[in-house]
Amino acid sequence: MMSKLDMLKFGIQNGLNVARAGLSEDQIITACMLADKIGYDSIWYMDHSNVPQWPKAIVNDPWVMLSALASITQNVELGTCVTDAIRRHPSNIALSSITLDRVSKGRGILGIGAGEAQNLKEFYIPFEKPVSKWEEQLQVIKLLYNSSPDNLVNFDGKFYKLGNACLQAKPIRKPHPPIYMAAGGKRTLALVGKYGDGWLPIGYTPELFEDHKSVIKRSMKDNNRDDDDFQYALDIDVYFSDDAEASWARMKEAVKVSLFKPEILRVHNIKEIEGFDFKKYFTEYSMSNQEWIVKMREAATTIPDSVSRSSTAVGNPDDMIPVFERFIKAGVNHFVIRFWGKNYFGSIDKFASTVIPYFKNTK
Image (cartoon, rainbow, N blue to C red; front, side, top):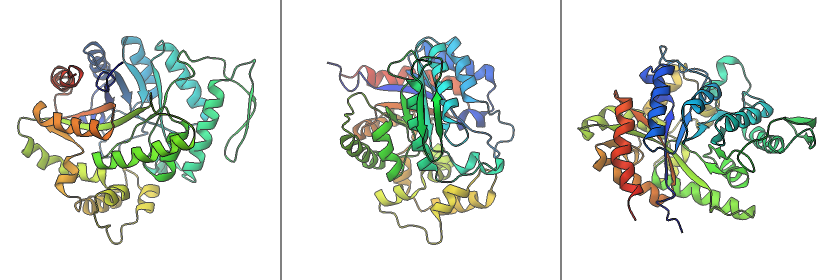
């Protein structure tokens, strides 16, 4: 029988970290070839329209990039981290993920979330009832995964309708590409337990991960599912540095902003900020809105350093290993890593040669 450590996975994300570094498509492809060769388990690509705070960044379509990566890798799974359910029709998402699975010979993953105002507001795409819409998306996608000319499917929802519809491409993975869901609210976590093959949150402490994992497990029980093969993933930031304290001092403000949400405040007994409207923030915030960015930075300073630092791996490998150990104890079995810093290639190689063997070789 395989141990929990034998089943542990490590992947890399091409996300805001890569955008900020200004890496070209050729550089990203080279980095992913390296990750594939030296033992990573997965590669992920963000789905954003833009990142206005870094105007020189290149922001590409994830499905096109992942298909390119499929052609130059052989071992890693490939997924979106995460695709935006609001901007695409579920038939488009289903076919894109099936196509990725086929061109990668069975390595495709659908990472999907309910969407966020950040990618919608400037394009005048409505952000209304996102959770209800997301659930219908998942239902439609699963129907279409099993459709064919001999198995036409129908759906009559509030947001989506199908009438004798089908796709004419079958996924290689059975029954379909795994669905990793980004969720952090009570309703969305319950949907993970109902529909998901994996959970992929970002901006978490170990305590919050444990808390939300228990919500997913309760939902699984309610839906007569078990989590034996379920992927409790985590999008985590890693920053190699010879001086962990100095590096942490420079980055802690940004880390606190990424953590600042009602659930963090609740789990860690941090007093809510008077006058800060979380609902407005999540539905109105966009990266080009400087007013909300300033409000977030000011409010996030209330998170203690001890809480925020537990979410991020900073320093040398010996500094990082306890952070990963604590998250493994919290239930993480698939780490999706955003490497920050100047030496992206070096960080990918260093982590694979130091941190991963510590866990993969431990019995």
